[in-house]
Amino acid sequence: MMKPQFNLWLEINGEVGLSIWRVRLLQAVGETGSISAAAAQLGIHYRTAWQKIHEMETRLGQKLVETQTGGHGGGGATLTPTAQAYLDKFNQFSQQIEGEIHRHYQALFDFDDSQR
Image (cartoon, rainbow, N blue to C red; front, side):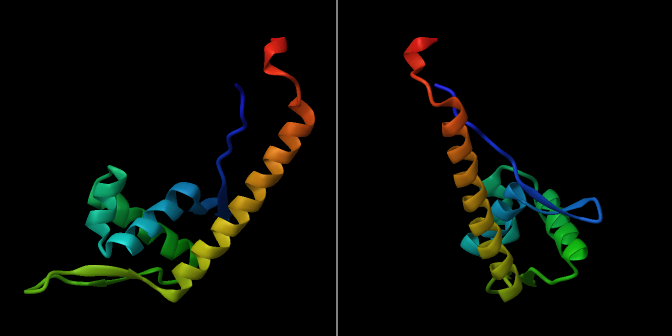
């Protein structure tokens, strides 16, 4: 059975600011409280995760992740209110786009799969 798939990203001056993958990275940081744990959850290197977060912050001109260095209690990371607002808006936008894609797909490809 066919079904549509899509990838969504938002660009700033021709460079990716937010994308489905980058939003997943930020969500993982928020869920785990750690950039390294988020990287592990996504199966990427810590350096890649840190680099992508830094790129987003630079391109958006906003701090997205607050970090605390390690020590006796260990380090950690939390999302800023700005990051949470971007996540909420991106997810809402993505869901609306996905709904429209499926609506248009059904209108154009509405046929019985058994006819193939």
